[in-house]
Length: 136
Image 1 (cartoon, rainbow, N blue to C red):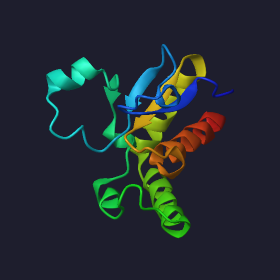
Image 2: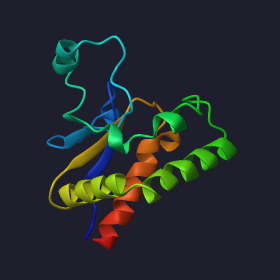
Image 3: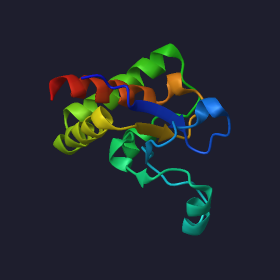
Image 4: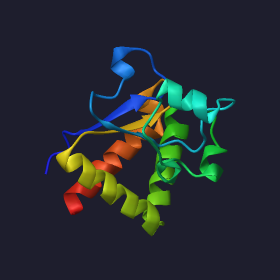
C-alpha cells in the first residue's frame, strides 16, 4: 500500500511549500501548544485539526535539544532516541498504525513548528508511519 496521502507541513507556515495539501487531516504532532495563544486565537488561525502530542518527542527528549541547533551527530542521536521511544511504547506504535490507516485512504499531514523539515521530528515521523504501513 502506498502512502501517497501522507505529507508534512509547518504549523503557522505562510509559504505554499509549508502548507498541508488541501483536504488533508492536519495533525499537530507537537509536544506543546503555541505559547501565549488563546484557544480562540488558535481556532481563528486554524493551525491544525487535531493536537497529537503522543507523536511528538517526549518532554525528556525535547529537553535535550535546541531546535534548529542540530549538527549531523546530534541529529543522528536525536533520531535514534526518537525512534527508540516508539519501539518502547505500545501506545505510540498504535498511534502510528492509526495514522498509516488514515493515510492509506485519505490525506494526512504531520505538522510541527520547525522551519527545516530535514532537521525536524516530522520527517522521522513520516518515515515511521511509512514503515508501519508496510507491516499492517
